[in-house]
Length: 361
Ligand code: SF4
Image (cartoon, rainbow, N blue to C red; front, side):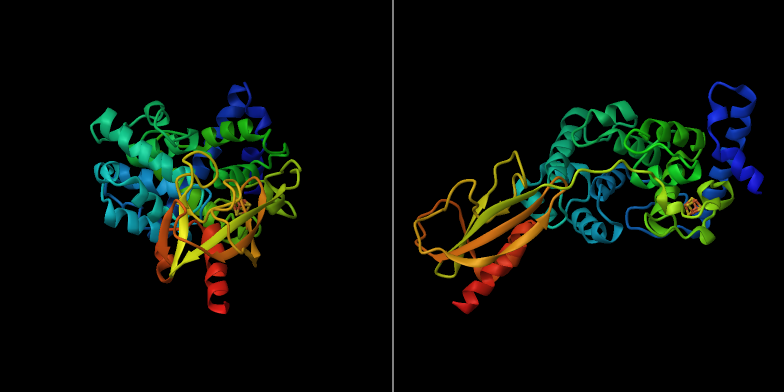
């Protein structure tokens, strides 16, 4: 079988050479078949995954795909369940209060997704009568739906043949074909190879099977090749360390930034502000920060700092605390119920420090 593995894994002869491409495509089909057989047998039960033989609900597919962007299955599950219990379809979500949605999203991160979620639900309602369009091009025209998500929704929800390449698929394909070129340059080649692998039928299940394999077997650091249903088709399997794929270009170190947040208290309430719609954590409730200046003249005391890592930079934020008058603009929130304010993680960490400062004062 190692001969077969080598035949599929060397993609170069496929380019413009009829017989070689045909041979490789046959092996690709076998590989896809083996993967789907494994998925049929071993797939996990996930709240957004339709049972075999049941038509998937496009709303559930879309919601889960947006939530799963750069976020783990374990982190998404409780949010997905909360959202579908509260807003069971796209019409309910389109009619919901924006602040309530932002607050329900708090803690899941990448808040632009929540703002786009609302905009997308409203556009589906206004332009498509509350029904998701079923082709990639129309899906891509909706807010927050990029190339990958449009392909995934078209395939999973509407059984269209589409090629969806996320980080999981990128990793598996780079290993299967031992792609030596580094990311991000290799991306175009990887999409071509993923296209060759994608079967004409069951494309939606194929995408889900690839994701499942990437999350449970062909993981970034420790691929469990002995358990892999497609190892006989994998070129990296024959190499010393499959985890070296995908090859990545060296990244510039993440820049560090500094900031200050303010905990201003008055009679058991703390001042919160809603952040501007555009920019970091836009639209979320938060403590005031130095971007707008101190919210009041007061005897500010240092209460430590928290570190938080965003995609493009790391942030160290100092917390200054004070007692003050309730004459600053914002929302005065009961300190005892600060956990219910729906603060994003950075400000939830700062609020925990503020509460400690209060107890110690
Ligand atoms: Fe990934 Fe290993 Fe399977 Fe290759 S054999 S696809 S490296 S788990």
